[in-house]
Length: 94
Image (cartoon, rainbow, N blue to C red; front, side, top):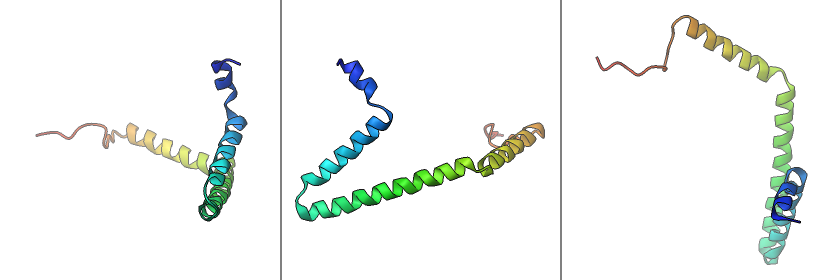
């Protein structure tokens, strides 16, 4: 296997599994007192990551984001058509 082949193989799920394995081994490296604290921190990280992914998925599946973006774009279009150039040109020195 060449360096390039190895690099191409490190993506997606493989990279995720490798990161998880590295973090778990790193936790196991420490003495038992610290290991307990780091294990809890790693478990909390996994839980929060799951919550973040679930939240992002729900928001992307909702049409709320599209409605807000459409409204914002319409506001920009209206402002540009009315000649409102708020913030687009420097303040005059006069």
